[in-house]
Structure formats: structure tokens, C-alpha cells
Length: 124
View 1: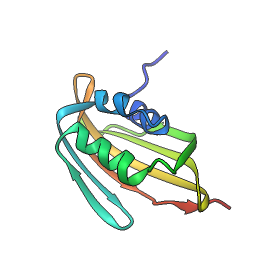
View 2: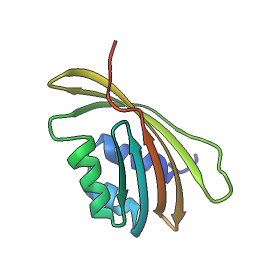
View 3: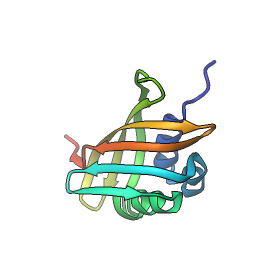
View 4: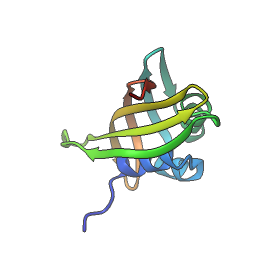
């Protein structure tokens, strides 16, 4: 059985809203950049990534009901791809959010990540 990729573990940590697990996956000098529908995000430390993910993207009022899909894409030399989709419920109703990320690893931590997000899309 193949080991779960760092990318899938990243998605699972978000789905579980597990800041400790997310922090442990990130290199102390992470090079993180992300694009959401309304903003560009940058971080250079794990705590900054956690603040972005759980302080802005998925707030306490956003209940992540399920990690619906998580797939590893083809590697591009030293860069790995992961895509994942969440079902989320909040005061505005049910939503789907999809993110695609490209990342590089140093050992068992993510040292570089570029991520793009679909934004919250109303469930039909």
C-alpha cells in the first residue's frame, strides 16, 4: 500500500481543521503563495499559512462536512500536484470549494506551494 502523499495529508489537515497537523507538514521556511477569487496570499512561515487557512479561508463558522475528493496528479520533476474538494456548510448554506496545489518537499515537509482556489460555490 502506497504512503499518503504530503499533498493529501495537507488536504486532510485542512478538512479536519487541525492546525497542529497542518503546521507539522510545513517547512519552517515555507514559500507559500495562493490565489483565491478575490485575493493573492503569501506566507513565509507555517504559522502564517495556518492563519490564512483557518483565519481567512475556512473560518470557525465554516463547517467542513467532507473531503469529497483528493487526487495526486503527475509530478513535474521535483514538483508534485494535488487537487481536493470540500463540502462546506455555513450560515449562508452549503458550498463546494476546490483547490489545486503544486508543491515541493524537503524530507517529510512541504517547502514550496502554489495554490489556486475556486472560492465558495453554492451547492446545487
